[in-house]
Length: 408
Image (cartoon, rainbow, N blue to C red; front, top):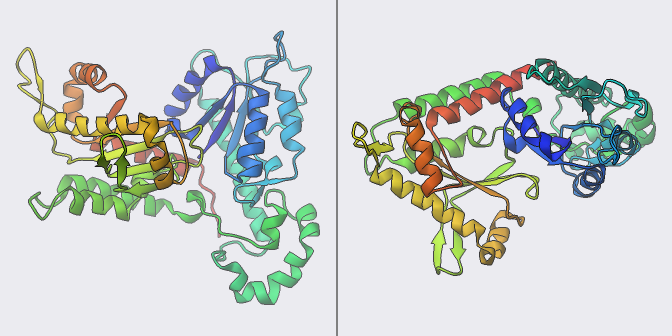
């Protein structure tokens, strides 16, 4: 899911904390801090590039001397657009818009154009806000389902729709031929381009079932807890990489759009190659992080001599951290940007670097030492244990269930 937030910079961390508590990840939140920046995003990222977001949240600043957020203007601008986004499939003016503000009165704002108007809670209680936010997402999805029903294509395979007998014998002449009328009278979300020729709608909530997600998470748990013993033939690649390559959802969830596996990257300065296990990609590289994700074994020991006054990083753990650190140095070197752009398909300097290794129990046991050593020696590297990755996916599963739409 991708959520666009137009609010003051001072509020951005609050949003991260609020959404994190309800199973959302930081890479699902795009932050802007003015009407002009948000308008530019809608034009350049949605209207021109045809990318996808799920909702827009805006605060208002009409009570201030400088009205930088311009919630009323944002509502009028967004709702006045008849152009499309999301691969040209949907209307920009259908995107749910939520007004989230501390103001009691709104003399200058026409609230009818917002799908929800919510007062900010200053006491740290955000259940109502998140429930109303998710309700607006569900309402948009219900409208899309209704559109697909009215187009008579709900649950039909649109992968090669124009080659199907249904398209040739019925849809082309009765619906596509009258696309303008259907657009105006029978649909609320889909674009006229989609009505003329429906294309695949590749969204988790449409193509995945909750049983499938639950089974994948269960298989992941079994894989890292009960796999055959590691040896020369049975290793990270044959056991762990094999699972992730067959079950990309565990790495992507709704935080990333795609991944590159063992992509060989040439270091121009060092005249060496870097080859991180996975690079997790985003639709919005300018705003969201592209992530180097290195996979090591779940039995990695973080520390030795734990009972002494000076526990030491294990040689294996230290070696893994240094490996991810090399990826960090590589991605931050401007000389390597052309190579990265050619391999990723886009240019960016917005990266994060994650090491998947070890067990949560030891991380918690060495909590203070763990975070202190990481910040001191490898600042910018995040270590995720196997249990923590499973928990991220359980949060994703819970969120998926909360906003699931039943279709026949």
